Structure formats: structure tokens, C-alpha cells
Image 1 (cartoon, one colour):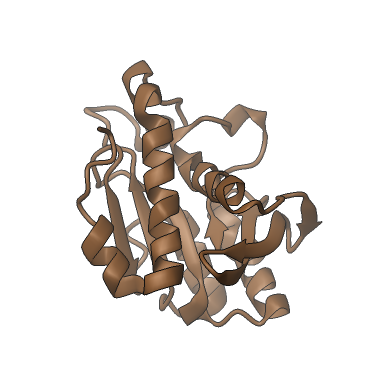
Image 2: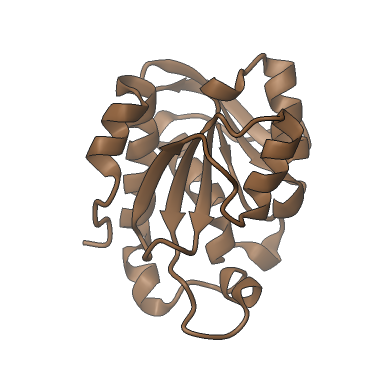
Length: 187
């Protein structure tokens, strides 16, 4: 499983790094230490929802996420169908989740990179809504910090997304989609 984001203090707490935040939340919930360096990322191995998991935070920057994810999948023997990727989505309202299996990249450069390296889009995505800016540059928006109102409920959003990952692992993607898609996690 991979959470997408950008490395470094400059990007901590930005909308584009919500994938990192969800994986860190999941790691904490499952007691998995994210301290190993490898696969061009930081990772940890452990059990989550009764399954053996590898949790990865690529350190290649978002647009080159495929290099890290592809390396990990190859070395660990993870087939694309067993891969879960958590990432931000500007087309979903802040806090909304959409679990999807397969599909295109939807303009997301991290997903584009993973698809190119794996040669397929047949992996599970957990899209976490960060909202769309009212105007201005989309890149500036996703690389900016959450608003004060968003920060007040961000922990709820992260826990909800982590629970969605656990549901995929424990009960399957279809069950998780029915349970979590369109759920309001900002309450």
C-alpha cells in the first residue's frame, strides 16, 4: 500500500500530502513503524486488519511516484491487483472518499506515473477529497496548507480514510466502496 505525497518539511500539512497523512494514521492504528528506507521511499511492514501489509511513503516527489511504487511492488512481489494507493483528489469535496478499482489517472500525476511504471491502472485507489479552488492555480492550491476549518476536522477525515483501507483489506473492495463512498467524514 502506498500513500502519495511530497517529501520534506516544505510539503508537510499540504493538501497534496493527504496520502502520506492517511498512511501514517493507518500505521499508527496498526502499530506499523515507518522507519525503513528502501524502494526510493520510507516504509514499514506489519499486520493490519488481519493482513500482512507493506506501507510505503514514496520519497520521489509526487510526479515520480511510480519509480518508488514500482520498485516496491517488484521487490515485494505485490501484483497490481493487490496494490492500494491513497491520494488527494480535487474533484471531491474536502473529506469525501471515493474508493475505486482501476481506471485512468484523472489528471493526477502521481497516479499517471504509477500507471506508466506498472503498465496498468488495475489497482485500488482511495481518493481523499481536498476540494477544488474557487480560482487561481490548481498546483498552488494543492501545495498549500489546509484552512483552519479543514484542520479542525482533518483528524476525522484521516481516521475515516484509514478505516476505509482496513475495510478493503478485511472485507474487500466492493464492501468498502458501498460503506465509504460518499460518506461525510467531516462530521
